[in-house]
Image (cartoon, rainbow, N blue to C red; front, top):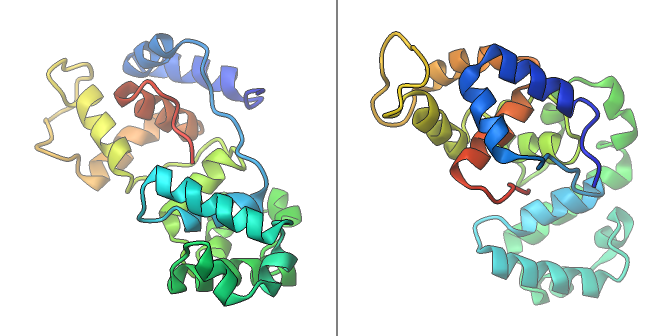
Length: 217
């Protein structure tokens, strides 16, 4: 799959501005972020997969798709609650998926207008959906819309990667004072400021510094 058109520019800028990030990027080779499909399907699948294992989420999702036959907002709106429950969705997740479908169908969520909206405006729109919080919306902006400057500051993997790479035994970056345990949120924000306007790219590489398998949502 093709990489975002900004990827090489971002990697060069990050590597130039931040030697630690430069080493992480160099170690990751040619891997890059790729987009994850249709907006409605991506968000519906994120709801289905909440709080269950990857394997279980895949099984439930496969049953939902098979039952729907045509996995569109209109079709999901018309599906019976009992049908969705029979696929393995909890009562609450059925409500969430149907709320999502209804918002897509009514135009309350309209991907066609997102090019004209900034990140926060899209997040505000998405978190109105039951079952979608800020973290899920941020993952969507990164992995579906491939927005270049998303910084999911409450993501534990990101915070851990900052701790390991910038506050760990290597002492790679001359910070005024070491952090104890999980990096303080404000400190992580300060560290992230040097990566603007490419914080999506920096975050993706930080995740990969902990796990070489590309992160997908």
